[in-house]
Image 1 (cartoon, rainbow, N blue to C red):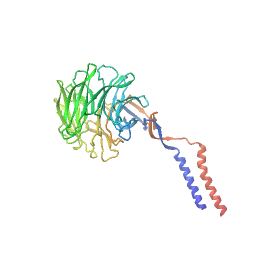
Image 2: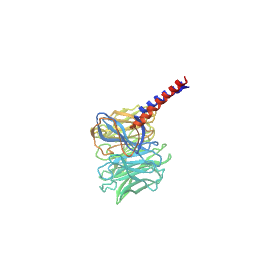
Image 3: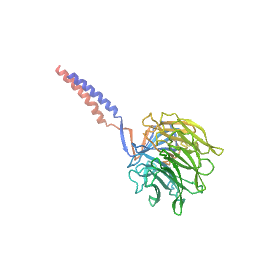
Image 4: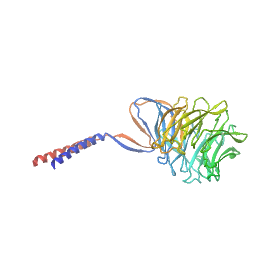
Length: 469
C-alpha cells in the first residue's frame, strides 16, 4: 500500500511538472467579435492591397478574406454576416457607394436582407441593412448590383437587388437621408433571379437588367431591360428563352463590351442553353453569338481580360469534358482560341456552387482570375483555384462546404506595402471570434505550490513506510 502511495506521489510530481510546462503556453478561445488578422512571418513581406472575398455557406455565415502576402494567397480575415434565413451568402459587391473614395462591401444573403459594411481601419463595421416590407425570412436575395441608376451623377449610388420571389422580385434602393429606402419595385408572376447594371444602349447612361424564370416545363426564362425616363424606371425591352424540357435557369448576366467593338453587349449564362451574347440593336435584343462546345450544365461564365492583351475574353468551364474554354475576339469574331485542361478531383461542377471573378490580385498590372468550384472527393468540398492566363498559381480548400460568390477588390482600403515583422504576432480587432495561442504569466506562489505538493506527499509516503518497517 505504501509502495502504491509512493508511486502515486511520484505520479503527482510528474503531473505537477507537466502542469508547469503546459501553463507557459495555453491555447484558448478568444471571443472578441468578428475579425482577426494574423502576421506569422519573421522576415519582410509585401501585400498587394487587393483581396479576394469569398461568401460563406449554410454553416459558417461569414465572409472570408484572402490576402496576397509575398506572392501567396492566404485566408487572412473573416467577418460574420447576420442572417435570419437560410445562411448562404449569394452575392458580394465591392464599390464606393457613397462617394467618399473608400470602398464599401455589399453582401446579399439568403435571409431577405442586404448588408453594407465599411472598414474602419480595425475591422468591418455594419453601416446599413437593406430590406423590403414584402420580403419574409424565406426570401432569398440572390443577386445585387451597384450603380448610378438615376443618372444624376451624385455621390450616392443605387443598389439593385433580385430575389427568388414571385411577388416583388426585384427592388431598387436609394439613399434617402441617413438610410437606404426601396424606391422602385418590379413585380411578375415569374420568379426573379439575377441582375446587372451598365450602359446597354451605349448612350452614356446606365440601364439595368433583371431576369425572370418560369416554373415548370412550359415556361420561359427572360431578361428585362429598364431605363431611367421621366423620374422613374421604364421596362423598355424583354428577351425570352424557351425552357423546353428543362428548367433553363439564368445563372449570370453581365453588361460589357464582349466583342471589343466599343459597344456593350450582354453575356447571358443559362443552365441548358449555355452561354450567349446579345446585342442591343435598334431597341431590340439580337443573339449574336452562342457557345456550342458544351455538354453539361454550366453554372458560371465570365467576361474579362484574362489573357492580359487589353481585350475582353470569355471564360466558360465545362465540367463534363474537364475543360475550361477560352474565347477571344479575332478579326471581329468570337472564337475558341485555347482550352485549359481541368481534370480536378471529379465532379467539380455541382449545381450552383461555382463562381469566378477577374482582377489584378498582386499589383503587377496583370489580371488574375479566381475560380471557386466543387471538389467531390475532398471535405469540405469547395476549393479555390487562382490562375494567371492559363497557369494555375495556387489552389486549395476554402473551408466551406458550398460557396456561391467570390469578389475581388480593395475592401479594406489599404495600399500595397512592404512590411517587416521580426516576431510572430497576432493582431485582433475588437470584432473577432477566433482560436489563438496566448501566453499567460504564472505567479511564483502558484509555481511553488505546484512543485511543493507532490514533493511533500512523496516525503510523507516514505516516512510512513520507514515507520512501519
